[in-house]
Amino acid sequence: MQAVVVDDKGCIIDAVYYNNMKALRGCVTHSGDEQTGRKAALDEMIWVNLPKLPDNVRLLIFVVAAFSGGSLRDAQNGRLHVLEESASNEVGSYQLEQSAYEVDAVAVMQRCDTGWRLRIIEEPAREGRHFIDILEPVLGNIIRAAIPGAPKRQKVAFAMEKASVLDLPQAHSMGKVCAGLGWDVSPRVGVDVDLDVSAVLLDAGAEALGAVFFGQLEGWAFKHSGDNLTGEGAGDDEVIEVNLVDIPAQVEQAFFVVNVYTRGVTFEQIDRAYCRIFDSSGEELARFVLQDGRGECGLIIGRLFREFAGDAARWGFQALGSFCKGQTWKDSVAAIKALARRSPKELQTRSGTMSFPSRAEPAAPAPVPAPAPAEAPKSSACAVM
Image (cartoon, rainbow, N blue to C red; front, side, top):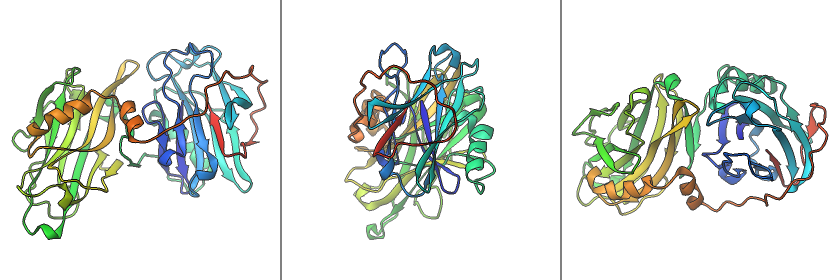
C-alpha cells in the first residue's frame, strides 16, 4: 500500500510506502510492509492526520502494488478498508481489482470546502511495481482532472528528511542517475577548505569493495566529476554519475561521504551541506539539505541501496546525514559499515518516534458501497489499507 501526496499546484511533494514510513513530518504514516498476507488482521495501514496536513495539500492518492512479484490477483480477497480513529472503526470497504497486472491507483482523497472527500478510482491496473512506475499517464491524469493547472508531465521532487527514502524507477528504465553534492564554507574560516566526496561501495556482507573518489574517478559503474579544492561557485561542488544497469552484482550499497581534508576545519564551519539526486536529463528527483553541523571531519550524507521489484532490479536512495570521524573515506569506513548493517526502516524508526493505532481485528467486511464520492472521516485521523 502506498500514498502519494499532491499540493495545490498539482505537484507530487511526498509519499509513504513500505520503505518510507512517514511523510510531511509524520502527518501521513505507514504501518510497515506485510509480505505474506497471512495475518488475520489488516495487513498494511496508512494513517492520515487530517487536521495537521499542511494547507497546501490538495490530494492523497492511494496505490496498491505487488512489489516483490506476482500480480494483484494473487492477493486473494483483497479489500480496501477505510477506518476512522482506530482499526476497529471501519466506515467503508471496497473490493480490490483482481488484475493480471501489478500496480493500481485505487482511491483518492480530495480537499473540498467542507473537509475531505474520498473517491474510488475506476482505472485498470497497469504494469509496474511502484507508484513511481505509473506517474504518467495514470497518476498524472488523476491529478490533472482534480487540479486543472497541474503540470502536463508529473515527476517527483522530494525535499527529504533524515532517514527518508526515495525509491528510484526500475534500473532498466532509469539508466543513469547522478548525485550532486554541495556546501558553503563559513566566511569566518579564512582559508580555502578542501572537501572530498567519495562513493564507497559495499557488498551484501557490509564489507567495503573500494571507492570512487578524486584518486580513482571511475569504477563499478560510478564516475566522479573530479575534486573541487575550494568549494567556490554556485551549484554542485562535486557530482557522481551512476549507471544503474551496469552496477556489478556484488555491489549492494553505495555510500556518499564527504570528508574535510583541511586540517583544523570540521563540519561546524561548513554550512548547508546537501545531496541531491537527479536524472540524466538534469531533472531533480530529491534533495536533502543538512541544517546542522558538528565538530567532525566526516559526513555520511546518503546511500544508494539495491532492492528487487519482481524480476527487475531497483535502487533506492536514503538520506542519512550522519557525522563521523575521518579526513578521508578510508578513515570513515567503520562508521559506514555500521550504517550498512541497518536497514532503511531501522534507521527511520531510530530517527523519530512513530506510533500507529492498534492493529485490532477488524469487523466483518461491510457491503461494498457505490464508488461515488463520499465524505472522508471528520475526526482527527483516518486510515486506508
